[in-house]
Length: 90
Image (tube, rainbow, N blue to C red; front, side, top):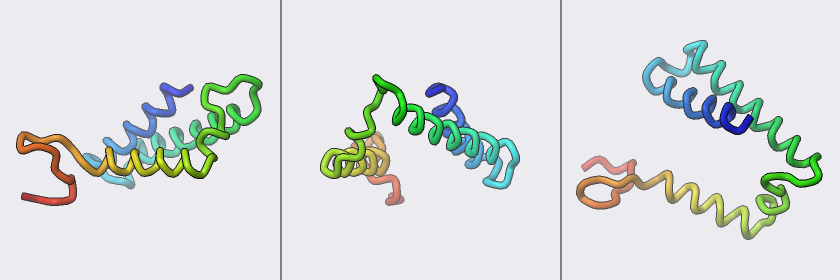
């Protein structure tokens, strides 16, 4: 399920870049990936031994630090000149 979830989201965003957000395949992939994400969270909340205990993510300090790391990692990309922000065009 996790493989399909990640594939749907990554494929949807990649397909949106080349074909546009209104493309039916893009919409289907993003909706399918988001639906599987909701299903994953629901399942993790209801099983005895979850892969990712939700209390880890819902803890304010830990969840905030994960969010900050995710934003930082996704804002910068490596280049031949070093690490540059993706928003700055040189």
